[in-house]
Each structure stands twice: as C-alpha cells, then as structure tokens.
Image (cartoon, rainbow, N blue to C red):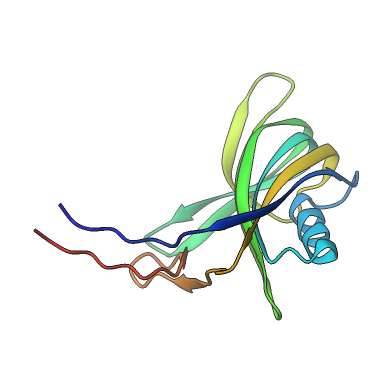
Length: 152
C-alpha cells in the first residue's frame, strides 16, 4: 500500500465569534482572525444568511461555476479553513443551506454571502503553518506537504 505523509498541525486558541449582521461571512471571519493575530484556522459556522453564492468545480475547464441564492437561508452545515498571509487571505469553505421550503443547496462558499445572524467556532493552528500551492492535475489549491508516495 502507498505511504501518505502529511503535516502535523498544532492547535492553539479556540474562539466562538458572533458575526456582524449584513457582513460577508468569510470577510467577517478573516477580519476577526486579523484582529486576533490568527494566521491559520479551521472553522465551523452556524446561523442564517440573506444570500449565498455557491460553486461547483468544473474539472474539464478548471473553473468554478457559481450561482447565487437569496432569501431566508439556514446554514445546515459550513466548515472550512482560512490562512491569513502578508499579501493575501486564502479561505476555503463548503456550505449547505436550506430554505423555508426545506430545499437544500450546497457547494463551495463564495463571496459575497451576507449574514442575517451567524456565528463561527474557530480553532487556531500554530507553527508550522503550511502554504497552499496549485495542484498541476486539477488546478485546485492544495496544502503543501512533504508528500511521499511509496509503492509496494
């Protein structure tokens, strides 16, 4: 069986963060991280949204196809990672929302996705903080790791 190596992460601080009404979900999480000096975290979010932009990856074109949904939206599930760099912020989240009729929609979370009432739970990760690189096969950003695949 092939060997798979990864990066050991070291958890730091944990936060519960009420997110401002009307603000973009990911922007609010990024702003909080900058205020607290958090460089990398994973998070879960709960609450309601006024709108959301969802995307699915089209691997043949190596682009995300997005669509926007507006209305009374409940966050059924939302989790992701965020890395605050000196020049850019990289956030990657998946979300599942439900409307008042019980219709569910999900995919990659894109901005802007406006909160009605939401909160996030964050876990900070400290050194080493891995970087992202573009996977040459899929074109998707992936965590850089000292991967070594040994074949039997």
